[in-house]
Length: 308
Image 1: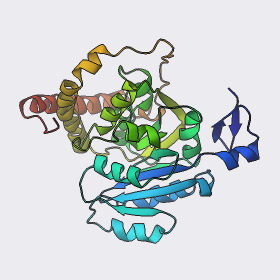
Image 2: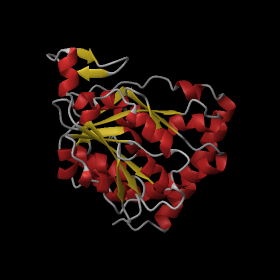
Image 3: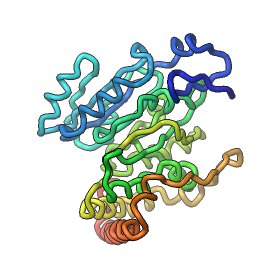
Image 4: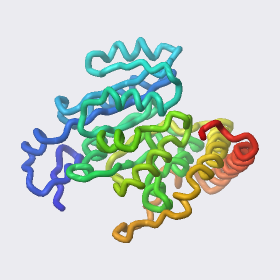
C-alpha cells in the first residue's frame, strides 16, 4: 500500500487518491476530550488539536466537562464556537467519553486527554489505518519535552507499542486512540462501572468482534505523566487495585485468547526518553511503582471494586 503525505510527516494511506483529492475526501472525525479539573492543561490540549493538519471542515472537537470545579468551564467557553462543550454529571472518564460518543457526528472518532497535547500530524496519522478498515488504532505516547526524570519514566508505563504488539491480549490506552464510531456503538461503548481500565475492557470487546487493533507509531501525543515519586506510587497502587478485579472478570477471555496467525508481532523500538533517566533512577521508579502495584493487587483481592 502506498502512502500520500498530507503535510510534513502527516500520512494518508491510500492507493488511488491524489494529494488534493485526498485532502477533500479524508473522513469526518470527532475528537473527544474528557475533562475534570483540567484548568492547568486544557488550553494547550485544545489549541494543539485545533492546529492539527487536518481539514477543519472534516473535524469536530468535543470537550466533555465532567463536573469540574476549578475554572475549566470558563476556559472552554473561550474556545467556543471552535469546539463543542458538553456537560456530563456522571463522574468518571468512561461516562464522559460515552457522552462524547453520543454527540459525535464523525465517521471516525479519536480520543485524547486533557493533560495531553498532540503533534500537528497526530489526527491524520491516528485515523490513517482506519481508511476502509474496521478496528481500532493506538498511537505513541511520549512525556512532555520539559519532563523531569520521574515523568520520563512514565514512557515505560504508557508504552502503547508494547500494549498492542506484545501483550496478549492487546489493549488500548485511551489518551491516544481512534476507531470507527459505528464499531464503538456496536460493542456498547465504554463500560461506565469501570473508573480505571475502561479502555482495556473496551479493547477486549473489540477483539471479540474479530476487528483488529493496530499500532500507529507516527501518531504522537505528549502526556503529563506522574512527575513525583508519591504520584507514581499512587498510579501503581490504583493499577494493581483494579487489575485484580479486571483479570477475574475477563479471566476466560484472557486464558483462551490466541493471537491471529496473520498478525506480525514486532519488538517495539527503545524508549528514547526513558533511556535518558539513568539506570539508578529507573530502578528507583520501578521499585516504587511495582511495590505499590503489589499492595494495590492485594487490596483489590481483599476489597474488590464494585464493577460486577
